[in-house]
Length: 406
Image (cartoon, rainbow, N blue to C red; front, top):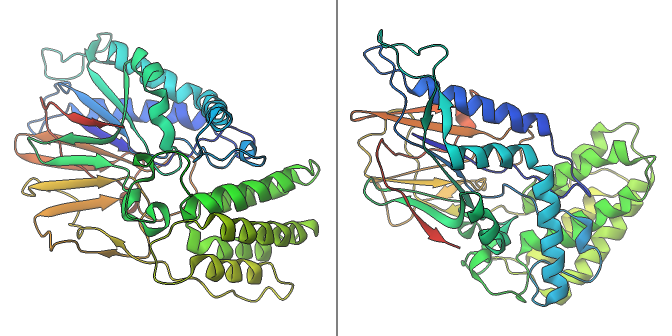
């Protein structure tokens, strides 16, 4: 059995909040799904042999933090930047305490489920331990997770960039290297050395959204009203940040007047910094000037609709329908929200791709896909009945998954 979830986006708490109740709710929902997966087609119950839980990137949002409003940047080398990264990751891990505690228990002792009774049904009051493999994959917003590999391994949790089952032809990765805004030159940000230039997505997250959020947080009286705006901007694709700000302005009737002033200041500061750092972005237009123009228009007094920068499609294989996909030879699972569309690669008709849908859609619990295989049939279920926002993969019982280290 395979469970895939992505984009929890748990930050260090300086600008974004985390719902601890949602973490407990998710752990309980996964356990219920494992018990349901034990129900076979003939009506008899048998616990799964193994469960693999893959957190497919962006479990943490390590970019939206006030730690980056001084001199240090997450993509830099040096002790100052490393200390800031460690501090931000520690803060985010604390906010994700209940989620990580549950995953640690599963990784160390397995998941407790009822045993099968003589009547082929779950036996009340009994307990069987199903082995659980737990893997955290690095995404574009938590690209330096590899720096925590030693600590994670002590708790039975592995960290990497790709999780794969080569025998069954399934692999899981975050997939931000396919997105021009988060890869820039086509290479994963996690694979490049430190002290590089930022991607456009990183530049906007750190030098615009985080700085803008810090300006708003400096006004505690207005912070309960403006904090949701920061969360909305943090969860939006780069090409849609201007539109997200404009939507908030139109909906927030009681918005403080200073928000527009802070926005214009933040946009001007980002444009100057982006001209200096030259963030990478694989689009065929000047992304800095184009997006800066849209950002400025979104904050104009007229509230006129800004021109939306072109959001290029990601270069990905074509998707195949969800459901019974046992006949598909290769399945690629992506946690990164898709762009405006997808473009086929190498005409990969035999490959199945499914990634997180509805980019930037707010939810307390991220979409989760559950896959179980009985004989030759693969069943796909969404943990929270959101099939249009599910991640899909194909694995069966008794597999021996491999993982590429970060």
